[in-house]
Length: 465
Image (cartoon, rainbow, N blue to C red; front, side, top):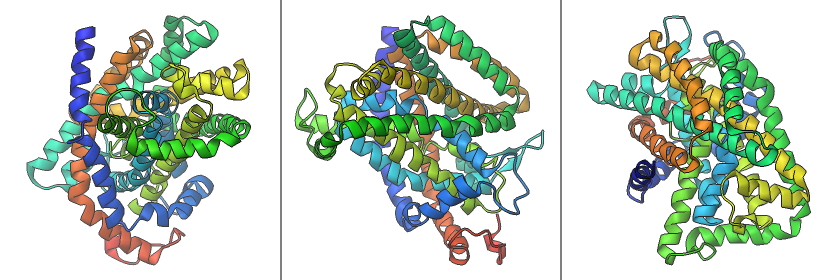
């Protein structure tokens, strides 16, 4: 196992090094931000209204679930242990400055999330059961001419299936099992068995079942966790200015991290901030486009805007509270790692064991929701590769791996996830760059006549989905 872990560490170091994914992720997000004229900032208010208040797109006919259910399904997949354990791991390895780079990844990543959701809806197709199917595994092949687009789409599908067992399965199950064992003394095998049974019960119903379940408890779990974070920050309000100062200075100097020279520590803050940032919000990975493609919507722009709010909620809200709680309470210097560090922060901040209980409960709900969301992503990519007949075997393997993940060494699981996340993001990011001009043109055409997302019917053929 040590040899496997060492190999994964080496590969992750290359994939997430300074010459590959970090500049590609940030560069793609920045390019799209410029070409879309900062759509994630200009239209954030109307997008939040459409996704969280209106919830259903008036007049929409095609689609399997509502825009709100598509949003909560995508949130279910992203608001997972990356928001609890991932943030803590980033700060542990990269110092408080890693939080800054998670913010940067989130802000520019909103443009990436918008673009991939736009493409997911625009190029979606119906499968053998009459359900909408879309995502990079389809739009890369349909939008990019010649065999290059086909190759990109198949590469994405392969690595997305593998990633579904890492970011969407083993890391989640492992963190739940570890947290339940440490907090309540529940054996890891028992936690794994319970999660396996519950996941199987929901997954049998497909996307409609997943949409109903996530719409029911995802908002509640976010409110519970953020509410606890607000209480901790209220208790430590005097520490907030110093904590913010530490985040910004450490992002560029690395003075608060331990070991190494300044340059290497700066790169650690950036590397782990960006890596854990994409683990948390998945912007640029293309995964959320799969959920967006199932939404009932009248135009790709509208669903793209709803989907980008997922990154805002995930990173700018949930991740920020986790990071600030860890830093203001001093838990980042406790020597703990992962969810244990976050538990220490909440326990210290709230002055009792119930802080740890809140984290443990949040981990369970966050992780289980991620397992549900990612199972759908994985099965859609399996369908793209081998057809509808591969879906049921995939689901069976997926639920078994939940149990395996719950009883596997944490470090191996995280390193595997880092590698798979990066490799599935590469073909999608290449596609986003190549298609950025078309995305910008069609976005401008739609927003010029419906700037407040009121749902006016298309007036030009070029505006139609």
